[in-house]
Length: 324
Image 1 (tube, rainbow, N blue to C red):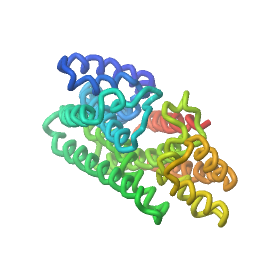
Image 2 (cartoon, rainbow, N blue to C red):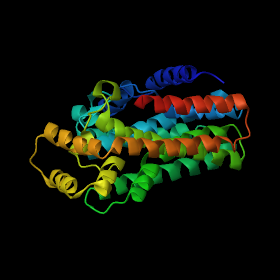
Image 3 (cartoon, helix red, strand yellow):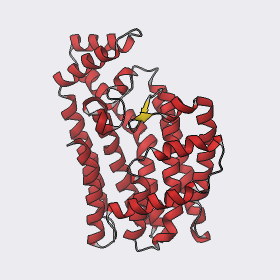
């Protein structure tokens, strides 16, 4: 097993090689741009890590791991357009620079390339890999659709929200891990166990994202702080606040949710104040840690070396350290 930094180095080197494959025309510029914004490349790292955990040939996972990274960034392109997000990783979002139409078209190419890379595997794994990727891609779309539908509903439950982030975000984490397990010839039971680890960790990660969107530092978070509040996103924090609020707090929340002509900073401050009064951050952190604990528990079902389980535990802790 390598360190997380070691896997990140491999992905960085492989992305540089992949960059040489892009055609030199404007269609590929948005793809090059979003990949150039960096990020920790956590999902492809998980594919490599899972392959190593089950003692597979690591080189066999290089290009499939790149496919996971491209697919993840493709979903970011879509998400930023739909959310009208101005920033991604501290820089202008891709559609701000290249326009929505150009970004959508480049995203189509990005998805196709992601599929091609993920399925760059031995024939014996091809059906399982294709089924996993296609199921994940469909689930992500289902999750995004739920997220969009929530915008026009005032009766979204916390249970529905958890299901939405499972589909929209967490299944990609699970897919990345299960992909590495399949390529390393892990059993179906072990592949499912490491998938469950990834999905629960992904849910914890997204709840953490919700917290950081309100209480984080934009310089470290890489996105506009308060963006979810400004766009009336149905996050765990907002749904829990509506559930816990007294009549005065509920009236204030509903006022800001209905108001269309507002000062963004004033709205963010007002809703954040209510979150603080209701201790919403602490309640969200509690739920986040519950899913984190479920992820760690899933590791106990893996028949791998204890040393390799330790690497997966360290990875999970690294994700949670974002909030410290």
